[in-house]
Image (cartoon, rainbow, N blue to C red):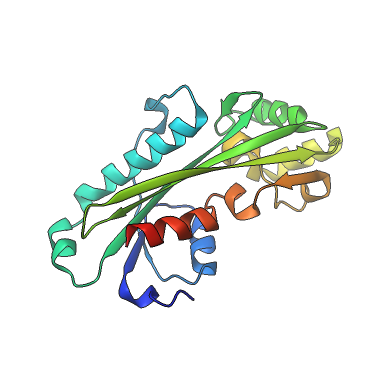
Length: 203
């Protein structure tokens, strides 16, 4: 537990269960707010720029819903954490599969190959207005994934709801993960080390 965890509050600007779990694992207490934005309306050339722009847009969408005046007068600062993540395969950004067929194609591509996740974290200090962000990249290498296993994954359905159809902690996929260069928490949506560093910088 962070020694000064009691001297500030956190709002997690995400509906993601995985992000809530990771932030709780880090020892923080927080409230949750979600941003309703059109992510597909945001386009950037580079995946790193895209995830930063979307995390920023989420913060901008949440701010008007908050009584920012109160936070400015509060003795203790409140930090708003927003983040985003995409999967990158052969230089192309992959979003959630639009169909079972697309999900199947995505996973076939990963079989015996590799993909990367690029995730962003932006922290806004609501008391001071200070905002700082960063991104983190993880490379994931796969063994060959048999067709029947791909079919099972599609039937089970979780892969249809995640960026790039990519889940590494799934029991059906785990045996086919050859190597992860980076941290699992980052793949799951919230890089702990980056988040920790940005929290310290924002205070």
